[in-house]
Length: 100
View 1 (cartoon, rainbow, N blue to C red):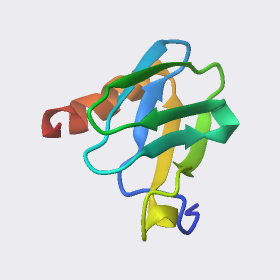
View 2: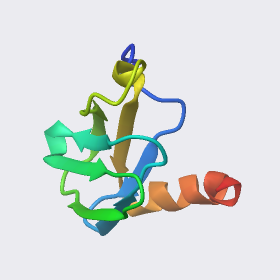
View 3: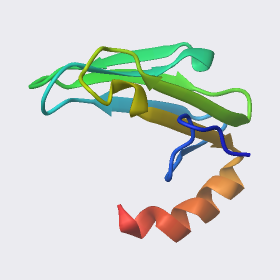
């Protein structure tokens, strides 16, 4: 199922019941990495490195968007996190891990 203006081409896939560290920064203006259903909001400020932690206890797909007024295409900055079991995460990482 695809949600218009919320789904992304490449999802951030994370394993369930593992601590995840999120690091954010920006090059131009203040952005905000926000996934409201997970209770995560991290501001990305130019010249600074901010961090947050996730500990996902429920599998599923979670959507969010930039929650700062950062410019003309502000409403077109979606984020998508897919929480899966560790075996599926390792299979996904073997396929796309070398691209990053």
